[in-house]
Amino acid sequence: MSLKVLYTGRFRNGTPIPDLAKIVHYNHPEVEFIPYSSTEKGNVILGINRTMAADRRNIRKVMYLGSIPSFLKSPNREGVNSVDHTFFISDYCKNIFLSRWKFKNYSVFLPFGPLPADDNLTPIEGQRSIDGPIQFVSVAKWYKRPYKRLKQILKFYRKYLKKEYPDSILNIIGNIKEEVVDGVHYHRKGFGNEKIVDIFKKSHIHLIPTPFDTGPKTIPESMHYRVPFVCSNNCAGIEYINKVGKCGVEIDTDPMISSWAGYKAADPLNYRSTYVRNKIPYDKYFSAVKEIVNNFEEYTSWEWNEKLNYKNQSDKLYNILKGGI
Image (cartoon, rainbow, N blue to C red; front, side, top):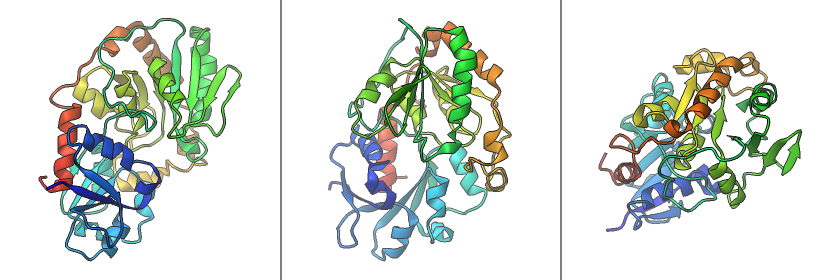
C-alpha cells in the first residue's frame, strides 16, 4: 500500500514540504504528499502541532521541528507528547527543545538537497577548483530575518575580503529586488528563480555568521553544490562537518546557546538585541576563508558516507513517516 502523507499549516506555502517530499522521493517516489484536509484520507499527518491536536482521527501524527518561532505560534505546544513522533532538523535543535519540553518519541533528521528552485536531486560530486574570480555567497530572507547579520557580512567583505581578493564577487541571495550596489550583487530568492541555482553552483565559499539557527537549510544546500561554508557556532554546521569531514569551518562567534533558557536570555532572533548587534570575530572568519581558498581542492573532495548520504536519509525519513522509527 502506498504511503499517503497529509501535510499541514506552514508547509503549504512552498517550504519546506517540497524539500521534504524531494527527500522522500529520492528513494521512495511512490509516496504521495497531499495538502491536509480533515476529510482527506491518508496514513500520516505531517506538520505542526496545532492541526494535529484538532484532528481526532486514529491516524499517525508526525511533527517536524526546525524553527523555534513557528513552534511558539502553536497554541498546543504544551501537548507535544501526544504526537506519535517528532523529528528535529539537527542535534543542536533537539537539545534546545528537549531542555524545555518532553516528547514521546523523537529522532534527528539532517536534511539534504538543492535549492527549492532546483529539481535535480543529484549532488555535485568530485573535487572543484577556483577558476576565475572568487565568488562568495550568503543566503537568507533578509527582509524577514534582519538578525542574520547582513551588515556584518557586508563589512567583512568590504574591509577584509575585497582587499585580499580585489576581483572577488559577493552574491547576496534573498534580497527584495535585484541590484548591484558598491560591487555587491543582490538577488531575489523566489522558488522559481533558476538563476540563483547557477549562482550557487559557481560560488566558492558560503558565509553564514548567523547568531542562531537550528539548521540552517542553506548548509545542506551548500553541500549539494559542493560549496564550502564558514559558519558560526550556534547552528548545525559542525554536525555536517563531523559526518563528512572538511566541507566547511565553524567559527566560535558568540556565547554558546545550548538550552531553552539560554535562548530566551540571549534573544538571538531580535535584531535589536545586543547579542545580534555584536561584531563578529572578523579576523577568525578571514583566516577561515584564506584556509579554504588555499586548500580549496581539499575542502571540496569530501565524500558522502555511511554516516550521511542521500539514500540513507531518504530511507530514514520514509521510515519516520511510515512508523518504522
